[in-house]
Image (tube, rainbow, N blue to C red; front, side, top):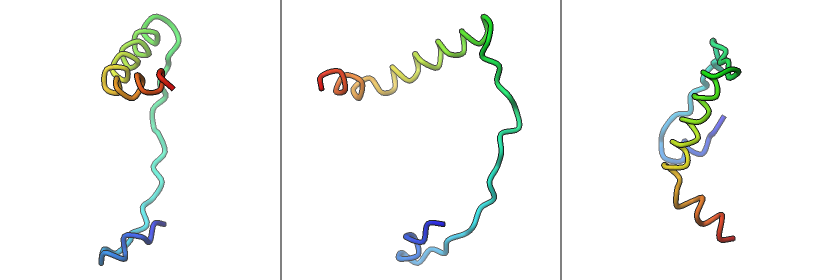
Length: 56
């Protein structure tokens, strides 16, 4: 548990672990489409980060 927040007067609360309840099937055409669209979103969102990594 993160007790660093208690420095600021906020009480740390223990939260239960929540397991994923659904399985995502990425095989087949639908799965490929999901991977492609999520990849495009990440590349668009973090464009500058990838540019800086490419220049290293």
